[in-house]
Amino acid sequence: MKYISLLQLNDSISRISSVNQFFGFTYLALKKADLPVGKTKEISVDATTKKFLSEYYKIDPRSDYYFRIFRYNNTEHMWLKPDYPGSGLQKLNTSTFKEAFIHEHKTKNWGWSENYVEFLETKLTNGQKVPAFDIAVWLFRNKAFDQDVTKSEIVDTFFSEFKITLEEREKLFSEAITSEILNVDGFQDTPVSWREIVEGIDPADDVKPSTGGILSLLSMDGIGPVKSLKIEPSNRLNIITGDNGLGKTFILETAWWALTGVWAGQEAYPDRKFKSPKISFNISGKYGGNVQTIKYSQENNEWSKPLKRSTISGLVVYGRVDGSFAIWDPAGSEKSSENKIAVFNKEQVWNGNNRNIEGLVRDWTKWQDKPEKYPFEIFERVVEKMSPPEMQTLKTGQPVRIWGDPREIPTLVHSYGDVPILHESAGVKRIITLAYLIVWVWNEHKILSEQYGKKLEKRMVIMVDELEAHLHPKWQRAILPALLDVAKILSSDLELQLIIATHSPLVLASAESIFDTNSDKLFHLETRDKGQISFEEIPFIKYGHINSWLESEVFGLKEARSNEASDIVKYAISLQKMRNVSKSEIERTTELLLNVLSTEDKFWNRWMFFAKKHGVSI
Image (cartoon, rainbow, N blue to C red; front, top):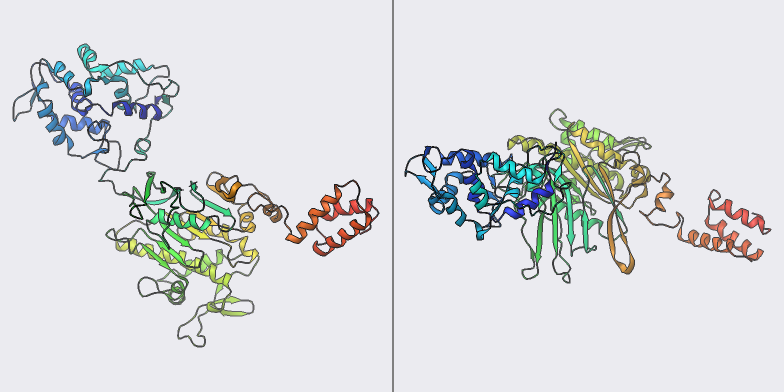
């Protein structure tokens, strides 16, 4: 068996969009209901057309609206209200098309008039007959056909099922099949889904945005270092690499805006030389999502406002490069987005503000004092998970007072003693801060969800700029896998989308054991000819050794050595290619190599063989 393909469906919809909706609604509904000709029978036309529209045009399970494929008088209007059969369509039936019927006023007695076909012929749009094949494609989009079915047979099936007479076929319908789509492309193995039909179309007014969305598309034209950039993140791990100044932070800042609708910092402004700056994005949830595009008005010096979102993003935690954090929680009030979004600087993350966060220091001691009420156990487990295995696991100690501070200050246990967190290293503070914000967001989300009667989110997006900042190499090798495991500590059914920017080969190496090409992606920014910056997804290759990562296309070093050592090795290699080289030059170069290379450097084997061949001992 086979079904009408999406390609064929879209092609046919484009040709029947100019047909008057009466022919696709009332006419077919009453033909199917055996409305008599020249006499009447008792029938509710409103109920009959409503049932017909519900069967063939109510396609979105989230909505009571009807999908409008006939748009001859309004190309922008894509949905018909649920009351349309008894309002707009009824008016069309009893006014514009009343001469097609025999109808006793204020009764349910209806029938076709004797000359209804001739009358309907006068109502064809611009005299163009209804394309039978194309309307059949829409009506039979879920119908299974035999493998050897032809397009002509589909037309015959349409005429048969809707009891179309020979006169009607001749005067109202065109049996010519004008579609240029080949038979092999006109069918597929499964029915076209409603999501595919409405993709890129704003949902009906009664559709509430689905929740739990993640970023599935972000494209920018005319803004940022890359003039035209498109990223389609995977649903789990996304790593963005590239030199300084090429746009990694800009991508994360714009991704935050796409997820939340608010800029965490300075709003992005376009290149004035670019004619049509725009940003497109898609937030995908349970029912997919719709691509939305905003354009920049040079005249008004502002971005257009996005249309109604079909999907609201799940929880979002964004660790920014300056140490601040941006938070999004969709569980807040629907009346205002103010309590859904918060941006905390470093000082506020640690010491709180007067509005919506106590801060790490106060929350830690409060949670620790009443672990039965607050998520201290979860916080401890997250901190432990984010500790590098080669180093001492971070354990919480007892709070202490320190000179000049009236607060109880949390501590971490070290082999040399307990250290107040205010005195910890920058690396430890960064990890503790990230752990705290993740746990704090989840705890606040549970509280807000209960207050507003909402279900807990099952998706969280975590974005971190320069994940490796302040971290020891041992920590850089552990932090990425640890972050992916954190979600399961919060909730067994919480899924995480991670988008991180990094310069660290150790972070890339740490992904080798966890990277899944089905759910993870690697993206790279680089400068190409004429100073143009490119952005593309690249294959994730397991290089193993850190030096191999440094020499890969991701980092682009020709040699994993110091600049001076690289230059001397390069010169030594050039000597090896020369036909005649003096013994003194080889000796001089050997001294230079001894000054810059370790005794274990792999280049020595090659150089020692060359030097010995020319009578130089090393």
